[in-house]
Image 1: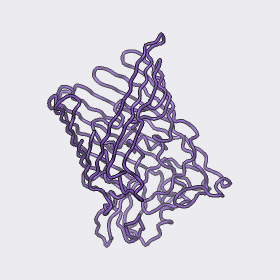
Image 2 (image 1 turned 180 degrees about the horizontal axis):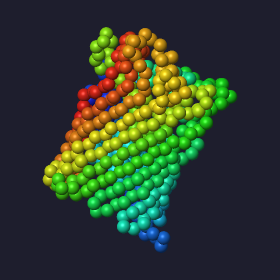
Image 3 (image 1 turned 90 degrees about the horizontal axis):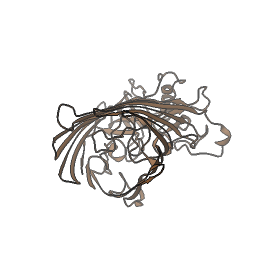
Image 4 (image 1 turned 30 degrees about the vertical axis):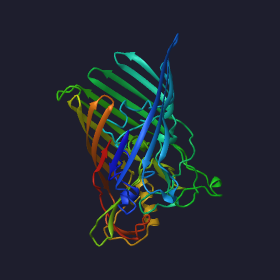
Length: 440
């Protein structure tokens, strides 16, 4: 598989952070990737039923190496990744596979992009144990335990370490103390699919005293205590309607999610959940405009009575998939996601108030009279992809995706973003980069 991306990162990542988000001279105007997958799938009949083993290994080369600047020149763009690697027997699955929480399409209702937000995505597998029971007439139920290390955590902020100009700090999550508890009830029929999923996710902090900015431990960390753990979770409803009147094989896929302390199941990609940091032109006497959004499971301020304050998030995404003829299908897809820090900015006992107090204290540059702090944000995506399959096992695709960040700060402030941006006046403003284009 060979791909090329314009105005985005590999696999159609919008210009939502890093050098692409800054629109600086280090940004890559295009990126490319080549990949080969080796799949092994065995099925053995036994007196206890079929035993299946499955594994997929991917070799890939991305140019430029990595998605953005290769600081220090240490990377070469080559990767070997294990996607799925599991054993199935008598309804059980052991190993690295799609979560029992996920839909059959994961984060791909119709898109090629690995960066369509709005819901859960474990398309390259998560270490888990799960069991699926078949109740007949297409009704099934699954329950599982997922390792949260890779797929199910975003970040936990210790606000005493300070927040930088784009509202983030080091990740203060502690070690993994419990697996995610996940499950679904699903109905598969000729008309399509309906699924309800639920997940429980433990949010656990490391320590109260940590190094500023990085949240690394110090010699005082262990004796400083830690916040009490809190359970969060998410719920999802999904629907697939097949054979709609617009044409043979046409379908609609859609899922909607609500999460508290489990933001990864809303702001989810095939990799880590992004924090958004974007710049563009501005008026109002500012050097440029800035828009950002911090993706977290929660925040805590050492000494506060209620400890960890969990972040809420919700999202919806879907696609209409249409076949023009046996060789030419197209998909129209999109998503909307929201992240909410509860309470109000004037009340430090709330999530929003604690966050804003830390942000203002650590970004004390002059602010305009109409400045206000609000870390809530929304992101929207809309795209279209067309595929051509001239012969079996050969498909050419072209995808275009629009992205919009709706941030809630107002006014202007003197800020010091990451170099090469200067420390000067910036206007807080919504951001819409040029659409990304993906060819494969």
